[in-house]
Structures are given as C-alpha cells and as structure tokens.
Amino acid sequence: MVNPFDNIAIIVLAAGLGTRMKSDKAKVLHELNGKPLILYIIETSKKIVGKNIIVVVGYQAQLVMKTITVKHEVAFAMQDKQMGTGHAVLTALPCIEQHIENIVILCGDVPLVNTDSLKKLILDHLNTHCDMTILAVQVDDPKGYGRIVVNDKNMVTRIVEETDADENEKKINTINSGIYCIRKEFLFDAVKKIKPANAKGEYYFTEIINIGYQAHKKIQAITIGNDPYEFMGINSCVDLEKAEKIVCTRTHKRP
Image (cartoon, rainbow, N blue to C red; front, side, top):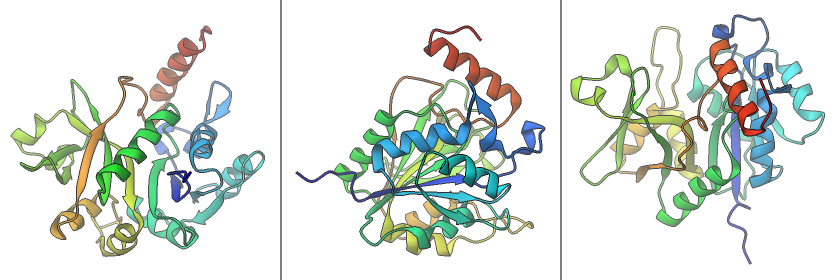
C-alpha cells in the first residue's frame, strides 16, 4: 500500500533573528518548557515525512544546526542574508529530492502545531488536487493578521496584510497561519517570479498566491481543528510566556 506521505517534503524556515524577543539568541533556540522551539517542529515533521526535512538557517546557523543534529537527521539550506520568506524558500529548493511531489512549508517558531493537523492539511491538498493549500485560522479579532481573500468559487486570490486592507477586507476573520502545502512544480516555477516587496529587497512568500492566481492555479484555504493556540507563532517574550502556560496546562503541570 502506497504511503501518501512518502513523496512529501517539509521546509522549515528557521533563519530569522527574532528581534522582538529582546535577545541576541536566535528565535528558534529560545526554550519552551525546557526545549528549543525548533525541536518541537522538527519532531512533529519527522513523524510525517521522516528524513525529508529541509531546515533553512541563517542567523546563528551553526548553533541551530548543532541543536537539531544532536537528535535528528535533516538537510540544511543556508540563507546568508535576511531577504524575506520567499528568498528563504528559494534557498531550500536545491535540497528537494527528485521523488518529492508536494512540499509543506512551516515556520520554526510554531511549536504547538500537531501532527494530525499537518496530516489533514496534506491529505486534503492531495484529495482536492490543488496546486496550493493554505492552512487558515478563524479568529474573532483578525486585527494585525493577513486576511485570506477568496473569489466566488472559494478559491484564494490573495492574502492582504492589515496595512493594505480596505474596510471590507478588514472584516474578514479568516487569517493566514503561514503553513502551506504546495505542488513542487508550481513552487519551483512561481517562487522564482517573486519580486522584492520593499526597499530592503525582501521577497515575501505570500506573493506566490498572486502569481498563482494570475496563472489560473487552484489555490484553496482550509481550516483544521478547534485549538485556537495550535498555530500561534512565537514572536515575543509575551508569546513565549503564553505558550509556556498552554504547554503546562496540557501536561497538567504548574507554570
């Protein structure tokens, strides 16, 4: 029997500085319940795709790689300059093996995401034969997050950020989790077409949605699970404290 996950690879973005953590330490090396953030996502990914994991490193790359390789075998891609998520994904492409057909993209600072949710994302993506599937989250207050805009066929046309959203778009409560499953051929072609988004020369991965929509690609967004914290990114010390309490509650330990 064919395992649907055999031809799946996972790219983990872990090159960022994490300046909002108010520390010189790479963000993914900050510890949650005594374990670096990056190890949570590596352990979850490994349960799904085994060794088909590519970690994009940059800031404090040697420390990040050492932390991971103590227990796990993965491939590493180096992002020498912080040029955005689109550029980070681009650096990982040479590490993708020939047999891979679809790729999941995760951030290394989302430690609470669970294996079942990622498996559901992949299976839905495969079953619907989409070019790209975005894992979306329904929230009561979407302020500050990227809104997912769909057309009358419920296909995603773009992700609009808070600063660019009009009044109607700001009312959308379906937001982007930053987790994607994408067909390899589409990814390899489209990521090279992303243009710099600002004067810093940063390439944002979400631009791939505009590229796909213009090329009539099938891009969907799905919501999974009822845990509002599962897809929470750790961007600050406050986020880390919140995640610590969640983990302690889940494991029936006091913070």
